[in-house]
Length: 289
Ligand SMILES: NC(=O)c1ccc[n+]([C@@H]2O[C@H](COP(=O)([O-])OP(=O)(O)OC[C@H]3O[C@@H](n4cnc5c(N)ncnc54)[C@H](OP(=O)(O)O)[C@@H]3O)[C@@H](O)[C@H]2O)c1
Image (cartoon, rainbow, N blue to C red; front, top):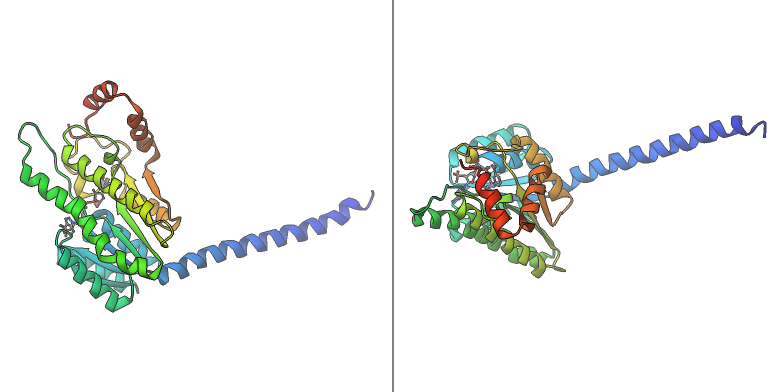
């Protein structure tokens, strides 16, 4: 038809503008949705005095969450809290040791009194050591297991009953790609992260239908104090980059999230290798030199 094109153009323009209005509204709604959501969240972050935990605290507070900053070094927590409140955010310093269940419970109580029930726990506090043979330094290993595993147990335990009673909550644990298989000179660290991943995986199944979600994060290398003595750090990420990825996984309430994808792919492939092939490969690719 002769008039069809001229008729169609305004209609197409109209439908295009409707479409762009709709998508703009959707985008605005999504952005507002996130802002509104975070502004209602009370978050407890362990290991918030440095590295990834500090980065997460700054980012979640910037998005509007009220954040409880838990670690042992009070002065560093106070600096982070001052940075947050200076920018108009909400933060509470909670100087505590995750290996001490009473201290963690007291910190949770303080945070609840100040900002209300805890919606999100990020169990992030952790330490790393080299494990050499034959001198295993069992005291150091016990300390590491105490922080990396029992510390997570204490943190989860301090918030879980209330989350289940409320029928809502989110547990996020910062494990590691080192959880996937044993790595050279990393026996203690790998064991601790494998334990934490399995612990939280089992909890995730047990917590089905309670309204409490569990997210297990498996990062590769992130530029923090923790990796300063590690000889090779392929695909190492800046703290900000890692924080953005973790926040994305939290918002999506992912069950598990491993990054960066290149190292995660290698770690997954290693899980499938037969033992002799894995031993050969791992011995030639030691990160700890
Ligand atoms: N960086 C990486 O490449 C990497 C990769 C995979 C996984 N991760 C995991 O990510 C988490 C954070 O590591 P990061 O790299 O950010 O390390 P980091 O910079 O060394 O920070 C570790 C944090 O844990 C806290 N912490 C240690 N022991 C504690 C205790 N007993 N009680 C309370 N807090 C304690 C420290 O605070 P205080 O000393 O003030 O107590 C600090 O805030 C760890 O679980 C780590 O295993 C890191």
